[in-house]
Image (cartoon, rainbow, N blue to C red):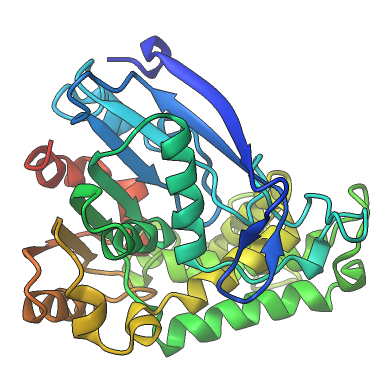
Length: 359
């Protein structure tokens, strides 16, 4: 089924206009808006809803960044399922984030946007599903920070979700924390950063582009870079052996990715969401692995990626062992890929067999 034929409803839900939405950090958002996209409709039995949680720079429009999963009749591309995506708090695609107006100052939050946790995001998504009249989810699925959301769902709302599939997701290790720190640091070093109060026409493009380039290195793998770029000169004809500014092909690729990213994403949102990723730690939040994971009643499938060094497969596998020790019905699968962390986007067909078992 082509994504052009999907029945798509887009909208937004606003809430907490008066009472505010209390965050785990102690601050309050007032009001909160969640942008959403819904493909298909919930059935009368309420057992066909699939909630898809996006990664750092994703959107609510799932079919725009995971179209392959809608093309396969075994998965989302048929009339049996209602697929819902929602833009997360902190992002720049319609939900409340740094560009929203702070009611206390009358100005955009900017860098003053509060720390939002994955649990805060999930509570806001629950508000959206209540608004849509949905009281049961057959499957919640996501990769990266989307996988964190999927896991938080089955911890925070154990009776609400039947199946959970989390891909390339676990609490970030020290390397991931270090890389996120460096990305935020280079954004703040941009002369146009202005403490986060930059105007729309003078964004810290250089810092944001460099942050994205650092991130791209962590999303891919050494094997992929060696195969795709090697030590070849940049394909535009630059000569890295005779000119000090001449780039190798891999450098040209990274610069291109940075330039593209600046055109579609916001620096303050990048800071906010990367910090949300850092803070994901259910064990710390609940005091112990048993207290956190012992709450889960859903069937959980964890998917590691063989070449992922941002969320190493060993870390995802170890998380699965913690789940099993806590009594969770959990299975672990590993995708063999040279695409690194991005494999869940670059090779979605490898998820098809795993997903089909839960749909």
